[in-house]
Amino acid sequence: MIIKNKWYLYITEFFAGMSVMAVELGASRLLAPYFSSSQIVWTIIIGTIMIAMALGNIYGGRMADKNPNPDRLYRRMIFAAVWIAAIPVLGKYIILGISALLIFSVSSNFLIWAAFATCMIIFVFPLFLLGTVTPSLVKYTVDSLEDSGKTVGMLNAFNTIGSIIGTFVPTFVTIPAFGTSVTFLVFAGILLLLALIYFISAKKRCVSLVSGIVLFVLCCFGGFSDSFAFWETNLLYEGESVYNYLQVKEDKENVILSTNVLFGVQSVLKKDAGLSGMYYDYMLAAPVLAGAQEKEKTDVLVLGNGTGTFAAQCRKFFSRSQVEGVEIDEKITALAKDYFQMPDDVKVTTYDGRAYLNAIDKTYDVILVDAFQDITIPFQMSSVEFFRLVKSHLKEDGVMAVNLNMRGDGGGVSMNICLIQ
Image (tube, rainbow, N blue to C red; front, side, top):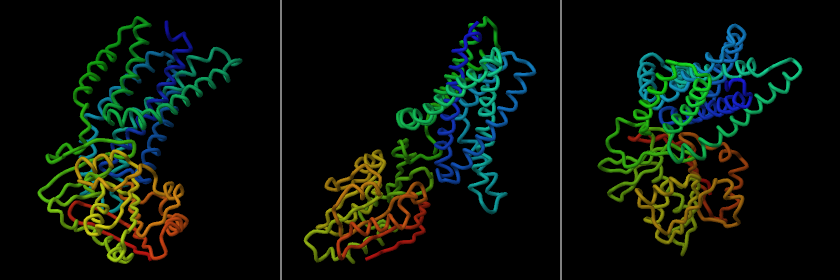
């Protein structure tokens, strides 16, 4: 019987730890289009998952002492696997349902309550079940008190290594390559496979296993799509990168990029080639203050280039300007060329804005700071030291333009623009 093989138990612990982290990272991506991926949302995700794991540890320990039958553990893993596989199928509808209910009952802190309720309903139960794995495996692996420390240490080590891998694989492999939905299905499949191997080796029939496999297959067909905005009919592109959920949509007047927020505006292209009607237009005052109309060449640097809205406007209205952009998400740069007609002579470097300034010696006539993660400014680009760094890269009569507070809703924008000369 495979349960007598400690290495299989260690492998179970390894993949349980990996799955917990994969679900946590998947949770952040699932919630991002609806609630953003701000520090508030991350805090709620981590907090609720820790609550689930703690309760699972307590329950798993009690059940292991009361009835140390490994069948129960692997049945719980089946339930966790099916629940995780169902998240891509039902998760977005649950989020919208919760949001609709809370809109009419919550007058303040809507984001906090909606994200918390979502995490409690969608993610707590499967992670509670995975939280029972470690105490149960301790019961099955410890043979005597003499080697208990070594055995528990090995279990914790396998769990930790699995968690480390479960952190990197979704972020850098499965989510960018296949999407959030497939990521949930992959790790649900791993948990189900562990249970399948156990029950086959034990030569036991398990109705839960058969039902779990059937439900998993159904979830694979129903949850394969990564369309978060399933109600939209005018999407040109919807996908994910290492950094963002990305959505390009089109209406009669505009092509719009949204990142992580379904109703936000991160970049815009006017089909009539006119002004955007947004804060980018106000930013055009920066080249004027820098004397772009009198100079033979105006060097412009855009930190947070996006799909090149400001860069394109600079090239259009200041023909002698030489524009460089820095954009950390290379998929956004690719979208700029595919959908937003960004000029070919705008050089874009895939890099963090602050790190880029630290790596170069060049000075500019205009530096636009327009770096946002969803609707918040990256912390490393909001400090006094950062703005001193920006100023050090300005020419003597150069101008720094800073977008301090951008909030797009598709129909307007609240802005707080700062021009420093």
